Amino acid sequence: MTNNTIETLQKNKDLYGSYESKEVITWCSGCGNYGIQNALKRAFTLENLDQKDVVLCYDIGCHGNGSDKIDAFTIHGLHGRVISLAAGVATANPKLNVIAHGGDGGTLSEGVNHLIHAIRSNYKVLFLHHNNSNYALTTGQPSSTTPLGQPMNSAPDGVYIDPLNPLDLVLSLNPGFVARTFSGDINHMTEMFRKGLNHNGFAFVEILQVCPTYSRTLTKEWYTERVRDLAENSDYDPTNLEQAKKVASEIEKEIGIGLIYHNPERKEFTDLLPNRQGVETAPVEEVKRMNIQNLLKEFE
Ligand code: SF4
Ligand code: MG
Image (cartoon, rainbow, N blue to C red; front, side, top):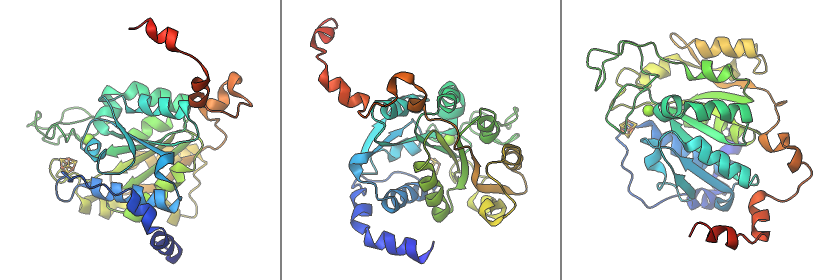
């Protein structure tokens, strides 16, 4: 972290503190969610974002238990449906900073359709993909990112099916913004979250998240030995899709973290809609001008 960043955080400690919640935290000791929540609050502070301008949407999962551990406008929705919730908020009020959290279970199985169409539609949402390689909330069943052969609850002899690499999937869908970060590095996460908040479109950030309780081989040490910051490689060009795909697929010996792919040319969803061009107001403001009482009466 640079001296400037530390100074800004210290100067704005009241803003950071405004996101603090008094709710009792229930995550296990050593869980990656602690660092993620901390990095998120730092990112909001460094971007000078007031609580009223932020909406956080949570899927079902251990990360979702963080929905009341941050003092902000939050929505805790149904399993696998968080992207549609967030897309609705972002479309209704494009002036907000909308952040969606989803795990590897909900995002790549129950809700994978929403992920695909959110990338296509390019809603302005920062999506934090908590990839801890298992269904942790329901006590450690395998997900689509659990390593092959890994014994888990409900798969005691090991997983028989090859895992899915989330970034291979995302990079095949013509995305605008793709990053990868690690829950053991708060500074790196903070920088990736800030970049994602400043992207005008769907920003996909995969977080390699440790779950010491159920994902016992993918430990903090295992990741720390392998992660390499792409920012230290001057030859890496995040606008080069082929380079991005290569980095995304290499996850055994070394794992590249950082801004993996950026295509600022892709238009955000609202900018694609002919009837929204030149409109200064947000749909959420326009709806206040209409009397919908008669319509509502039809459903009484
Ligand atoms: Fe965190 Fe895993 Fe515990 Fe869930 S089960 S709180 S993901 S360490
Ligand atoms: Mg998970």
